[in-house]
Length: 50
Image (tube, rainbow, N blue to C red; front, side, top):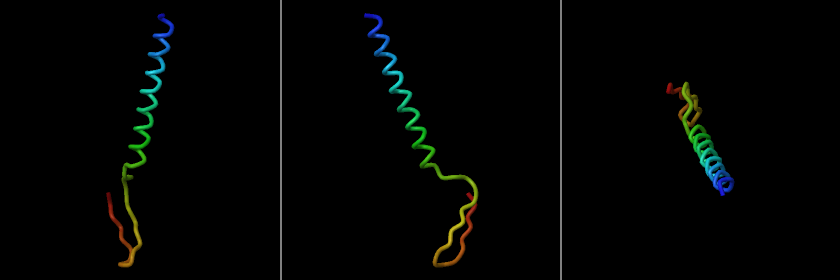
């Protein structure tokens, strides 16, 4: 009985850790980078500091 309960708890812990890692990876992907943004458009060259 204890073995199946421990296995279930381990499985839940692995799933929670996987969700946390996936959430952090998505957050980092969506985050805007720091530094300088250079863009070329119809009005010419634009440089913005972030």
